[in-house]
Image (cartoon, rainbow, N blue to C red; front, side, top):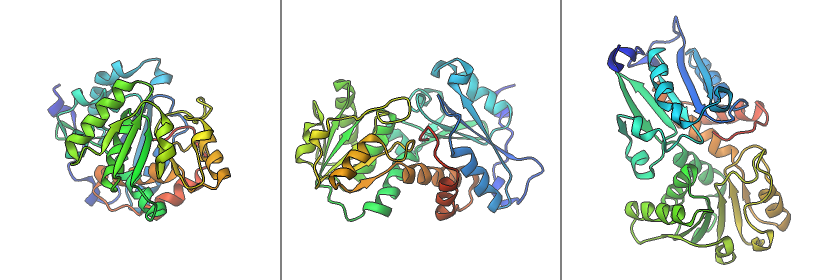
Length: 304
């Protein structure tokens, strides 16, 4: 059976009320067993009279890696999945397997949401809009003349894009692999005027910045510690971390102890799911209700 015949989901599931069978969705990533994403989608679907069955496809549990993506995407199509969320370590590896990309996903070079419709795989990125919405909700008045970003991977690509969209005058990017930071800076500068993104060798740039954003996994459960020396923090610096387990990372705790204004990763986790739900279903999600669901679900060890 070819892929055109394999994708058996309805092109318009959102307008048909409660289904005889659920809308099938999934998350592909590593170490995702306690993700809140499935429950957020299922609970929001129930409010709209739509049954959603959201499956975790955990590469660690399967004993494999991104090399399994071709088989996993094919299996999802054969089973009639309407879409997939994609997380670490697959956000960039999935791109060659897709038929098309949204303008944002193309600009970012990273995908966290794949729609499976009419035999086509369309990649989107809701991470950038998730971070932007969370920032605007909690830090709209924060200065952003100069922002330092730690990390230049798939999540870093999305957050860097969001930071420039939010008006960062200068975005200094630090990564353990300097060439990756340089690549992301060049990529962002192709999409924004003024050469505002630059790769820098270390987080010392934070000493002259308005804000600091951590997009690395350092501070997440299983990756303890801080992504920079505490000596580079100061009270006038705002600090954001996209990790949501724990909700207060060592970085955020240290920053708050100094009197810094801080932003945790919960808001990004919710708002990226809000936009993904809209893409998957065509329904208008209630962001406040999804935020409440996220909070009530308790802490979990991955940010999706």
